Amino acid sequence: MSKKSMNWLLILTLLLSTVLASCAGGATGEEGGAAADVDPSGQTISFWHVWGTGSTGEGLLAIVDEFNATNEYGITVEAVDQGGYSDLEDAMNAAIQSGDLPNIVVGYTNALDTWNSVGTLVDINDYIDDPTYGLTAEEKADFYPGAWESGLNADGVRVGFPHGQSENVLFYNSGWAKDLGFDSAPANWDEFKAQSCAAAEANLADDDAGNDGTGGLVIYAGASNAASWIFAAGGDMLNEAKDGYDFTEDASVATAELWWDLWNEGCAFATESYPNPEFASRRALFTMSSTAGYTYQADAFEDEDAIQDEWGFIPFPPKDSGEGAVNAYGQNSAIVNTTPEQNLASWLFIKWFTSPEVNAEWIEASAYFPIRISAVDLLSDYIAENPLWGTGIDYLSLGVAEPAWSSWSTVRRSTGDAFATVLQSPREDIPTILEELNATAAEAMEELE
Image (cartoon, rainbow, N blue to C red; front, side, top):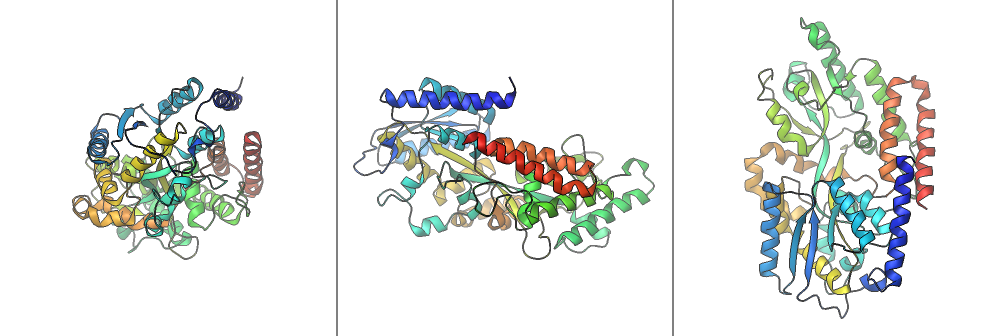
């Protein structure tokens, strides 16, 4: 049996187990609704996370201890490390079948949407809009748009609530760019191509044969990298009705053509691993990376072969004009549907955890970016100590989130494969490749339905 078939078999198995649990009296149906007349006092909440026992995990435990000691309801949160995201997903899938569920679970939004599709999660919108325990209009407006939208699925159900975020950005060697004659970061795709090609030409023309074929953009044809350029061009990979995918939209086609041009004109190249050494040794003017990787890049500049340069983050430039975009990687928590009392207690912890003051504490512990605009003012000392990290703050308002759909698990792999195929195919084949990607994406959505 193929891995794809196994995935859908698992979903059907989870759905059947959820239905059986409901018939047996389990709290998986309407109990997760409004919070009226629900008393969360004295509840014990299990919070499954992925942050281990390092400094990030220690920071989380300190925050949980603070909540347990100060909340007015006597709620106790028990933080349980489940390893990495794949480990947590395996544990959650097993828990759905056994009925031994946590109350809060961290997860990628496509995984959260899958669990929601089998009736396991609460629509957090019910609590956000609750007149007693919800958020005010001012509080909602305080969230960065990319983070706020990251937990919404195709039906508008809020399967996750953001607690932190990172960004997929361009790492840019501005010091080398200045030596190449460019005084500022590229403002559009033409300028980006000009700088990339100039770097490649410089390496080809120097006396070092070992750097021939390098110099411009390092391309890794992953879906998140493709999405970042599509977002910068004003697209979103969705159809006009926003109920399906469309990779034949103008922005997707333009991204494929840009990548093809860069690759086939020698202005982009690939690396066997993370391109940190290449970026630190003037073999790459640009790389695409999560801001979470900036410490690894900084370490690479300490290597023996590194060339000390000015460098930093920039957003993906717009195709023609505008501000561009970054791919907002929202970290989300979901509320598992158990009992009304535990559901409300879970929301109260999430609400507190994502308040500006506590969000700032979490950011300092985790090095993620804040989800609340007002949290930035509370991070002035941290920003002063970490100025490179602080530059990413300026781009949070440009964040666009990838689809929070369970089908995205399949479609994102197909997207990466399609854009890798683009690089190796004739330019005139791009429309056909993207049409085939559309068909694959439609099939993935149809199987879910």
